[in-house]
Length: 133
Image (cartoon, rainbow, N blue to C red; front, side, top):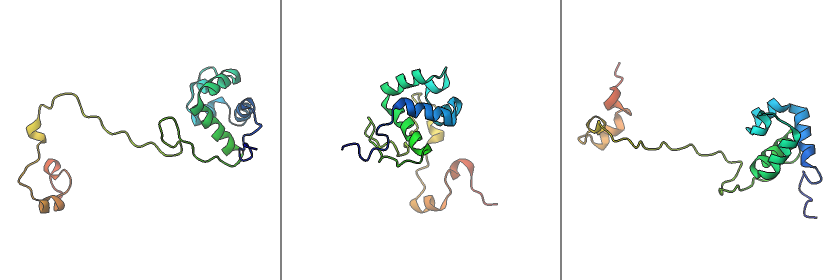
């Protein structure tokens, strides 16, 4: 019995999709899971075809089905990038501009400040001034 702990064992994907459509409707499904087959001309047949080819989308639909029916949730899986799917994605770092800097003199920090001055002056005080009101 390798499927003893699988709450989806014996449940067809078609049953999952039709159950979610009956409960939420296509518009609500599209807002909960950002998948084009829920938004543009949705049908059970096209959704099944897409979900069978796309594992990440199928995982999201199965997870929503489990949550909606209050069934036990599976442990987090590792996706194809090596990250766990339940972890939030890290914020994207700002990419440095490829344009050459024309005002380097204005952006350069003064080298005369000491470590003690840096700890007492507010951030960007050299740009905005200090709030000594």
